[in-house]
Image (cartoon, rainbow, N blue to C red; front, top):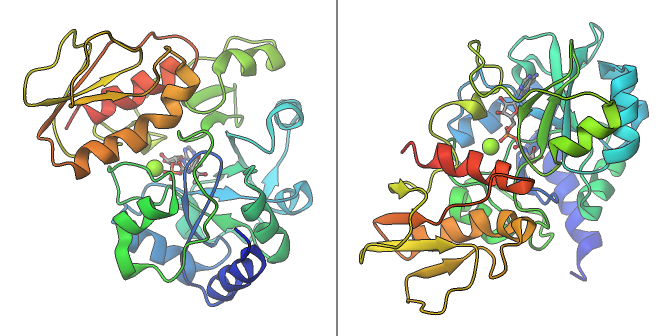
Amino acid sequence: MKNNHSNIKKAKFFLNKKECIGIPTETVYGLAANAYSDKATSKIFKLKKRSKKNPLIVHYHSLKTLKKDCVLNDNFFKLYKKFSPGPLTYVLKLKNKSQISKNVTNKQKTLAVRFPKHFLTQKLLKEIKYPLAAPSANISTKISPVCKEDVKDEFGKKIKFILNGGRSKIGLESTIVSLVNKPEILRLGGTKINSINTILKKKLKFNRKIKKILVPGQGKVHYSPGIPIRLNAKEPMSDEAFILIKKRKLSGKNFYYLSKTRNLKHAAKNLYKTFRMIKNKKFKKIAVEKIPNSGFGQAINDRLDRASKY
Ligand code: TXA
Ligand code: MG
């Protein structure tokens, strides 16, 4: 990536023109636009075919800028110190005088914010005068992108520029924690709940069945490769792609390993990549071996479960 300097310049050029671009993060690629601009952020919803009711995560480089937009509290500082920059998103109270576009929040009084870890995006954020609203760079309900080619696969020529930052290291979205009232987990992801619990000295709840849908990523179908998925499969049927997390003695052409050693972190990293590969190979069905429901396995199972609601 020797062209980093000129690529960041290009990224800035398009963002300043209120266009959307693809940006790399350590979790997944984002579809980014100026979070202070109504015009720029409205394009995100159009491109993604996303409901206007579904608020966006805003990406920051410094606390100084964040302070202008959100009310920060003790729990935030504790978690920030430990996990940021990194795969944790905080839902905070929005300040009245914040410049954040109303498109971003769906006129709610809260804002989801994150400090991404990818060096290119950090550099970019440092050089622009506004934070970046960026949902995952995929069409709504579809598979999230983990490299530049995936973003191209989703949007083709509809977006003007993608900042190439190689493959996303984590490969799964950030964990979302709401710190507005009593802290609670709204989405499982790249930061383990147990690690958050240790820092806050609390046992946070993850309630997938919140009545008022706060996180539409919790909606029924999501992260979907667009074909039926059979969970907890022992063996594949002949027409199924088979996803596994541990090497088997007898393997088949239709076998796809998320990990060969049951490493759940590797498995999380490979999940979306594998979904997209299987989709592009034109399989009609997927079977998935049982994934242990601990650590990153919880986030993987959450995605599998929702992807299987196709
Ligand atoms: O890892 C990530 O978080 C990636 C990268 C690009 O940063 N972004 C991402 O954004 O996953 P998105 O839009 O695909 O998912 C964000 C989720 C949505 O389900 C949205 O409903 C929820 O965050 N959300 C956004 N603002 C919120 C708020 N104020 N309160 C509760 N949930 C919110
Ligand atoms: Mg998404």
